[in-house]
Image 1 (cartoon, one colour):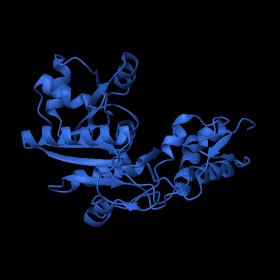
Image 2 (cartoon, helix red, strand yellow):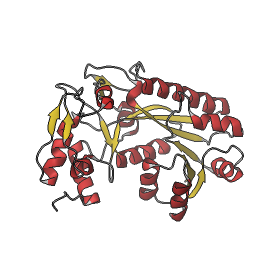
Image 3 (spheres, helix red, strand yellow):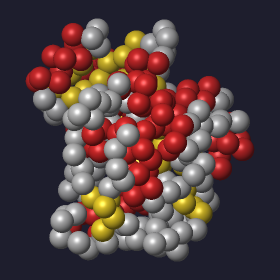
Image 4 (cartoon, one colour):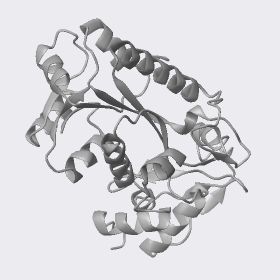
Length: 289
């Protein structure tokens, strides 16, 4: 597979690690990151110049595009770039979106057939970006898969590291839950979608067990042999303003299409299995170890 990643980030990196027979190229926003990726054998390019012919050639040769670049000022910068560079999408594009497109604070389930009625600035920007990608791929007669991801965690990016680093508090609101997904399950989902002949449309990604962030942090502390974190209401000033905004959402995400149409199931069905695997992968140590 020749894959071009718009945004050589966490998901693309894990995909590269876990996938055999892949030729990876892509973009990054800093010279330092480009240099690092090139050191790993990836044809990395600095994003931004629509006249960068090497970037354009690598993107044009790819079988699959994977875009993880978030919207900027309400628009998708990669779509704008492709229009400026007159670059047609690959035969199949996977756009990594977010479940913020869904509204709701009732704790109910949202599958791919639920309305995209989110009203947060992030949710509205993601809906706009999905529409831009739909237009770009549709105009060129190319397939598009939109993966709406729950909160991503995995090796090097998880509650274990935050707790071990000294996080002291957990936001807690009775009844509020959050869905999440291990990065390795995102990788397996991408493989499943790429293998599905003619597969297009929206795919939610979440594990089987939505849970409060405080419960996840408590389990991380337990695995590390540390005391549970103090729980605070979301509007406590010690948590910062972003926490209250994040916890205003309360919904459970269900990936119906991946499970029922493509036979996918998560390797890590809940945060417990996922954090246990992260503990082994990261060899996380507490300050006293």
